[in-house]
Amino acid sequence: MTASTIKAGMASTRQPRRQLFRNPGWFLVSPSVLLLLLWMIVPLAMTLYFSLIRYNLLYPGDNAFVGLENFSFFLTDSGFLPGAWNTVLLVGSVLLISVVGGVLIAALLEASEFFGRGVVRVMLISPFFIMPTVGALVFKNLIFHPVSGILAAMWKLFGAQPVDWLANYPLLSIIIIVAWQWLPFAILILMTAMQSLDQEQKEAARLDGAGPLAIFWHLTLPHLARPVAVVVMIETIFLLSVFAEIFTTTNGGPGFASTNLAYLIYNQALVQFDVGMASAGGLIAVVIANIAAIVLVRMIGKNLTDKA
Image (cartoon, rainbow, N blue to C red; front, side, top):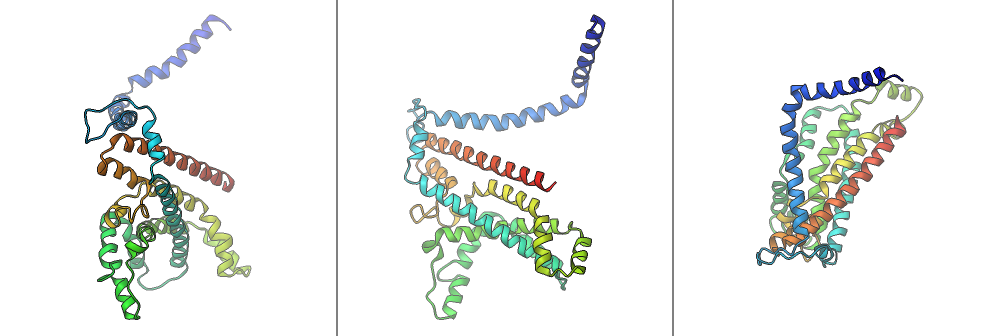
């Protein structure tokens, strides 16, 4: 290889870089990218800093460096294990209700033609656009209330004693409220996916003598594998940070019966004013959420590779 060819190769590699820096689009995009990085990095750096010091709002002068002591205190706190277990139950139950209910409702809407189907679709999707606080207040005061709620009126109609759902079944009540809010999202995604199902395959299956259940099991469910994986991934990320429903209805009680990790972090920061311990809990929650997201992304990627 001669010196002239080496110089020509180096010049060819430098040319795209020069074009990149001369491109005005690079200068137009860089401020927004820099602002986005600062918006993400600065709060994360502050959280990391507060997690390593003893910082309580009641004693602002005591900012001693404590290392991993806040992490140890958070992991050994009496509310950590109940909060972690409640988080798992909440996420798992809502995902189960959303996926199973979403598949069945979407299949029912696609399989049957009836008057007003468009209105029914809009009504099924509408709870997803209601603010979590508003939805929680509706359930608390109009449905679960032991005196004036709808369920209490139904219990009295059949001669039974009304149940105080938020006091006796707090976690179940939270699961019902959150599932009511996230089931429409699964219905929307799955119903859209069903509209892309090849109708010729269904007609061919019917001609071969396949019934509705066989078509649903062998054609519809495999077609919904990718949308279901997307629903599970997106909902898991958001369900790990459920807070408004708990704060509005049960305040994490009785005791830690309905406390999840997000509410436990809030309790440490704004009730006990321990910002250091709450920052450590926030970082632990971020690690758990990232692990869950990585596992789900890999599962979805493997699923997409197998289906391809």
